[in-house]
Length: 440
Ligand code: SAH
Image (cartoon, rainbow, N blue to C red):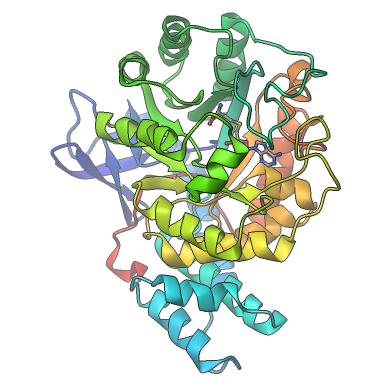
C-alpha cells in the first residue's frame, strides 16, 4: 500500500486502538508492547504497524492537511446521491434503500440485483455501491503492493496459466535477497507499508525458508505482510505467523463444490476452506473471494460466492473475471461478461459487512483500461500495484495480457495517484472501520 498518514491514538481497549485522523476516528488492532493515548502511529489494513515521534508525525500531517480535505470534498461531490427521485423498479429501490440503511440483504434480494438488465437500473446499483463505499470508508483507498516470488506450482487448476498444465512456461523463483530487496525498495522509495507475497503452491521454497523471507522483510521494514502461497497445514500457518505474517490471501475460487472439484481434479473446496478457517483462528486477517465467469458457473453460483465469503470473516473480498489462458484445459477465446463482473463487485459492497475492503483486482484491469475507474466508482476502495521485478513479471502468467506486465513501479504509482486524485480518493489506509458518528 502506498502512502500512509500517521494518526493519533485516542484510546486503547485491549488490542484495539482508536486512532484519530484529522477528526475521523478509525480502529486498528495493535500488538505493540508500549502504546498509549497521545502516541502517533502508522496503521494499514486495520493493523497498527509502528509508532512514530510526534515531530515526524506532525510534519507529515501538516503537509497532508489541506490535500486531505480537498480530496474528501471531491469524493463527497462524486458519491452523494439520493435514491428518492430515481426511476427504477420499486422492488429494486426497496433493496437499495435497505442496503443504505445498513441492513443485511438476503439471497432473494441479491437475485433481484443480479437480474437487472436495464442500463439505468444497473447504474443505480453501481451508484448505491459507491455511496456505501463512501459512507463506510470515506475516501481512503488502500494501494496494495504484490510481489510474486515464484511461478512454480504443483496444482492442476484448469483455469490457471501457472498450473502444472502449462509445460511451455519458463519457471522462476526469486532469491531471498531479491524478495527482500523488492519489498524494501517499495517501502523506502514509495512509502508502502503492506505487502502481499504470492507464489504458486510448492513454490520451490520450504516453509522454513518462507518464514526466513518474512522475518528478513519484517526486520528491514515496519510493515504488514499478507501471504498467498496456497493451501497449508496448521503448523505451516503458525510458523509463518510467528515469523510475522498477519494476513492470508486465498480465494476459494467458487463456492460450488461440484464445480470446484471439476476444475481442480483431486482437490476439494472443503480442504481449501480449511486453510482459510485455520488461518482465521490463528489470528490472520482474511482476504478471500472467487472467480467470476468460470465455465459451468451460474449466476446463482456467483451470487452464492458473496454469501459464502461473508461467513469466512473477510477483511477483504477479492474477486475478478476468469480470463482464458491458451496453455490450460480451458483455453479458448477470451470473453468476459464485463457487466456481470462489475455487478458482482457492486453486489459484494451491498451484501458484505461495512468494514470489508474491496479491491479492483488486476484481472479487472486486464478487461479494459477503464476498468480501474469503473471499479472504484462501483464500490471498490482498493487497487493493486505489482512490485514483482520486471524480468519475472510476465512469467507470472496467470492469464494472458495481464495489466501492468511491463510497467515499472514508478509508472504504476504515478498513474494510480493521478487516478485516485481525480476521484478525490486518498491513497492512504488509515485503519479499519470509520466510527465517526457522522459516517452513516
Ligand atoms: N497459490 C496461491 C495463488 C494462486 S494465483 C493460491 O493458491 O491462493 C492467484 C489467483 O489468480 C487465484 O486464486 C485465481 O483466482 C487467479 N487466477 C488464476 N488463473 C486465472 C485466470 N485464468 N483468470 C483470472 N484469474 C485467475
